[in-house]
Image (cartoon, rainbow over all chains, first blue to last red; front, side, top):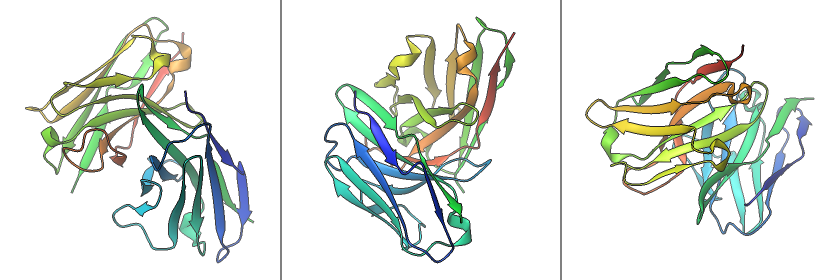
Length: 109
Length: 122
């Protein structure tokens, strides 16, 4: 079973700063990785799929990179609405399973 | 506008059963794989189950050990999750989520419903 590890657990930054979030898989997932944003009391929202593709309507300040076991979500300049929890997710086809990472909370410094 | 509205949550005793529903609108339901994801209070996301467009392929998280059953009714634009032998640790918000694109097998989850809370307690 593939395990996803996210770091740091909490990232304290100010609006306008750059955020760099990491997701590491216990074995290669190629580019089968997505990132989601969840704000308090809300459902998650897809940000990035297949490691580096922005979902529909996602601002360009969000970008994803990586392949294999190491992935990064970058928010180039934090807006007030970006303070939230971010989850990575991987998919394996045999056995079929989706796995989420534990999340990184981006909060206001 | 795409909408997913979950219902059926509530308080149930350990060992009990509950059936969740997800009503879909704003898209061709029968063309999309659908999914259930849960989130225990204050915890992270956990994938529960996925079902293909014609119910030909169904997958579950190993942790459920046969207690949950996913199904769909394309004529009613609805997704279901039958939950049996419920345990305290099944307490969570249960979200239904559509696949990102149609007819693509199993894809990423977009969008999600607002969720329904299931509380298992004596």
